[in-house]
Image (cartoon, rainbow, N blue to C red):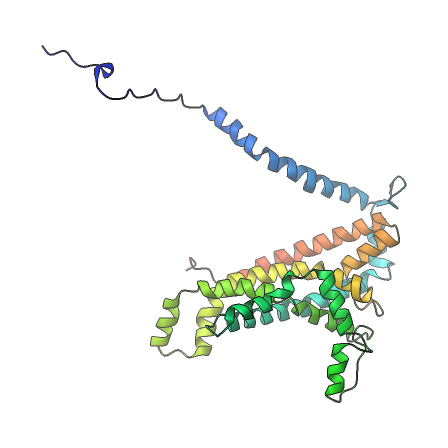
Length: 314
C-alpha cells in the first residue's frame, strides 16, 4: 500500500497558517476607533456651540459680565420692539428673492454660452470665472468705486448716454438692486457647475431628438432642463442659504442704509453683538436665522419632486 504524502513532504513553499479571524466585537471597536475623531469634532465644534448658544439666547449678556437668564425676553423684544429686526428680515428676504433666481439664470446662460466650441473658449471661461477667485473685500471695494456718485463708472456711462446720474448706494430704491447686481458679478461659480452638468447630458438624447425633428426649444425644455434639474435644485438650495447669510455687501458698501433698506439680518446680528455689546440678543437672532434656513430648506425639499427629474422614477 502506497503511503499518502503529507503536506510537509510536498515540494514548493509551505503555506503560511491562516490568521485567526477577529470576533465581531473586535471589528466593532475598531470601527468606533476610526469614527471617534469625527464624533469628537462634531461634539466639540457643532453640538457644544449649538447648546451653548441656545442658553445665551435666553440671557442678557454683554460679553464681559456674567450672563443673566431672562427666558424668551430676547425673542419677544425682537418680534415686538426691535426697530431694526423686521426691516432686516425684509431686506434679507428681498435680496434672496431678487438675487437667487437672477443668479441661477445668468449662470445657466453663461454655461450654455461657454459649452460651445468657440475660438478662445478656454480664455472666455477663465475670464468669466475670474471674479469668483477674487477676495470679497477687493471686489466690493472695486464696486464702491464703480458706484461712486462723482466719478464712478456707472454714472459716467449714464452721462455718456445723456441720462441723469444716480445715487446708487444712497437711494432707498436703488441700494438693494445695486447689491443684487454685484452678486451677479460672481455668477461664474454657478456657470462652472452648470457647465459640468451640461457636458454630462448624454449626447445620444440630442441625436435622437434631432432624428425626430425636435427644434432647439423642444430640446431645451424636454432634454436639457430635466437633466439639469438636480443641479438646479442644488444651486437653488445653496443660493438661498448664501443669500440669507449676506453680510459683506452691507458691511463694506452701505452699512445697512439708506433707511435700513440693506440692513441684512447677518449685518444686524453683527451690529448688536460687536457694536451694541448685546450678545444675548444677537444670539437669539442667530437662532431665528437658523430656523428660517431650516424651514425654507425643508419647504424646497418638500416640493422638489414637482420639478426635479430622477432617472429611476417611474
